[in-house]
Length: 188
Image (cartoon, rainbow, N blue to C red; front, side, top):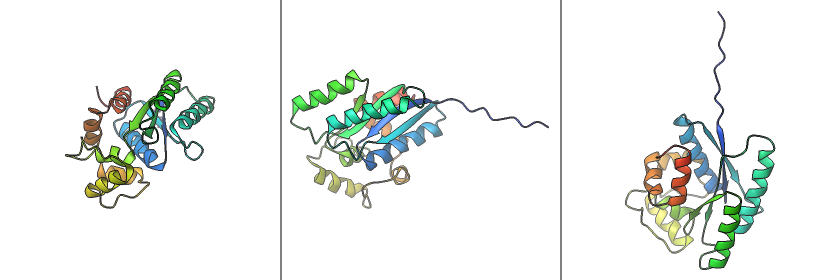
């Protein structure tokens, strides 16, 4: 009897540049959801740290990584960055520079306001509209619902605390995240 080779479907590559290891864990968690849903995508989660200390530098480093990685494989069908906006809060000119460069290079920015911990906090029931003013308050508030939270959390730890439904709920109030999820066919 002949053995049949299982058919391996090609997956459309998606670039997700991350500010640090915490965002990287979140991106890997999203990729796990895509795989479990048997969708034809692969999120290539890239930690842009070290070497990119502010949002503009991160966009530039993402551009370099996208070019370098495109030489080895298929072109990324979607490109996004997930990063905090606390470094440019109140500096509209700098924010415009960052967003303009990203847009010129077809990169969507998923802004976390003011930081990753506040972004995670909004995933929990009753915390969707939480708006902590700074990183320290964000961390304190997050630890009220996730007492053992420690940076960086792995995809496994994130999957123990968050569900796909939590991400969908947040995406209803987070345009850039919703765009990524729509592209990945996770929401309509």
